[in-house]
Length: 124
Image: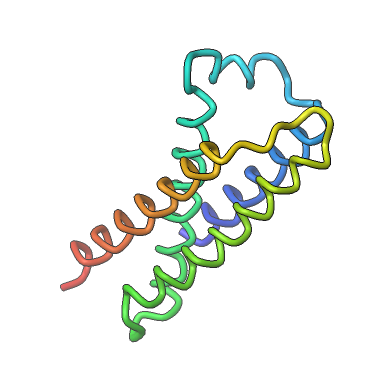
């Protein structure tokens, strides 16, 4: 799982950097060419990121309380998501949007919650 978490984290960072520079290819942006598609994208991408990272850290700290590990990962990612959304104010091709941020936060909550449930089902 840790390799998936690392690759997905690199993917998210690459998407952010390419979007900041207006270099996302048209086939990639067409995925979100429907009403509220970008909100769904924020929800899914940040949800998956939190899911993969939370599972990775739960495996790394098996004796730690699952909710504390998930909450810590989720809060760190929420801070980073907030900083990333705010940074869009400084890029002419990007738009700061509180609804995007809310979608990211909801995705983080869902991803962490699903990871905890998944871990509990896997435990003996």
